[in-house]
Image (cartoon, rainbow, N blue to C red; front, side, top):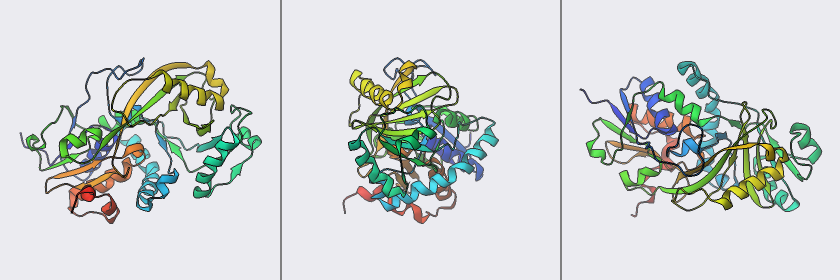
Length: 356
């Protein structure tokens, strides 16, 4: 059989989005996906028990934020560009696949439980240019919030999507081969795109490390929470992402660890912070306890661009893989199809950590 034009190594949201855009540009593409039937750890119920990429654990918040992000102007521009592309990306993928993605534009409420918490998050509100809301104004928008909440802000430009639905939609449109690639030289294709998340380091030697995150999925009364809530409760950071069917994703810890163990301490901290902010969650059922690993680089910005004349990399997206999927797919597909790199890629060259 004739070799495809492009092989994409990595069947997560980044790799699949790139493959989809390449097929739209007339290229023949095959995706190699290394998902293995290994237990994630913890009482996983929904969707089977297997270890997948970061997308499987991700909550799907589409928010350009965080003080550290705005300390890196190039990354902030990339995030903002991708956020603007998400509405069209979602609409096009839903139309082409016939599947619903859980895309919603309800915005985020950033909330603080205590006066000290308020001082911490107010810095980000100032950076993003949003006005603080009084507790009464917050509860008008979100009645389920605890009366103890000290203050907050509404971020109307934030969106959310269900990453599992996005991956299912993309997979419905693409040829995916279940294979664990260990040698790029053995991959038959004119161009190889490595989008293997934490597995990118073993394939390319590039500095991508796993950052462990633990996350919960709860289920209960639909509509209890109207917005995504990103909060701080007694110094504990937590986000709550509601789905229309009553699911609430609660996350996420961040640990420089490589193990897959779900721990009692992490679960306790997530539940304590979540219930402190929204007491009604105490009645919800715990349906999943999940552990995933975000692919991070030394500067926590992605690696995007050519490694050599045949291999292109798109990895190291850390906490922003879902948000950056549309712009990454467009930039890498254009690079592969035309041979010309967009200036947006300049700050994310894979070789930027090399000596000399």
